[in-house]
Length: 381
Ligand SMILES: *Cc1c(COP(=O)(O)O)cnc(C)c1O
Picture 1 (cartoon, rainbow, N blue to C red):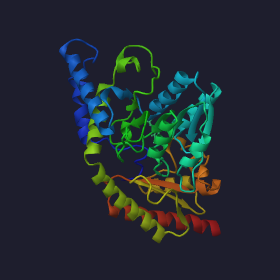
Picture 2: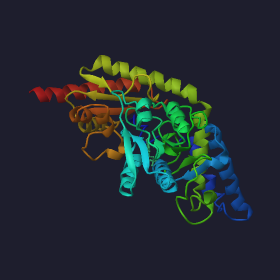
Picture 3: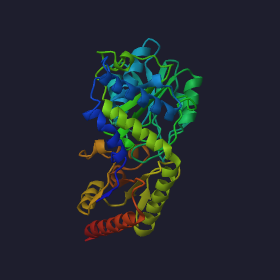
């Protein structure tokens, strides 16, 4: 098998699993208990919070553990809207956000919010000048992702943060694809809220965090006990949180080195596809993109068909985001970049890890070339 769908999820690193295991079998005490067994869990949570805060330039008491990226996005948007609705009801986001943000915005619109969706250029990047133009006196929140999950484009987060700070508007960024892969500093970029998810950086599934900076005074997400300083009730997922912190530490230890390796593989794959297969177009920005993201449009092809044929050859890829698979709607991200429905439907996302080899990528390119030739051949006949 060749796994090229690391934007959908990653393999949990063996050392992450190893670090988690004792918190199932040995230190299973409730972190809220007084006895020694509980305090082992409590200490582990403290360490995890500090490790994660350290990777972001944040303080430990600004990190709130959640059940993943979708929950963090929901919490950030809904709670800011509630906290600030007396001040205003206008939220600015972009057309290329993940559905965890876009569908939350749909919900907030029903609750009375007014949402402005920023455009992106042909390469999938938002324009800070447009952001400046659409800010209103009643704008309470700007939510723009750090990097896109489909085409990998990296957004001008620092510029956006500076604009938000200058206008006294809270800034949330969905950093689920970026965190653990690119350096992110919440203070430098004036980020007030940041979402991340462990399974996107070799941690376990179902655990993530929301960074909530001091300026964002927002409500509890889950009401109940006093966990997460009263803002996110429920017995903590100690093994998951321990695993996430180990994964975060591991990712940041070798961040630049790994990004270099992945970038070299990425550019190799892009080059090979472009030289071997006619009628292809790279989606997204050639340089300002996640180190592991490759996304191509193939003229006259259906993404779904390519996926099924690749799967038969043992290759895992994606036609867009995992969350939209099963629906035949073309990607909202590619449409926002100006592609036609047909072009969008003929796109394929290949997301690498440093474990992939050039030999694997050569095999993938040969398989893709065969698939494209076969399907296009059938079309003309
Ligand atoms: C995967 C992803 C999410 C959702 O995270 P989950 O932990 O799977 O809920 C949100 N935003 C982006 C950009 C993602 O890639």
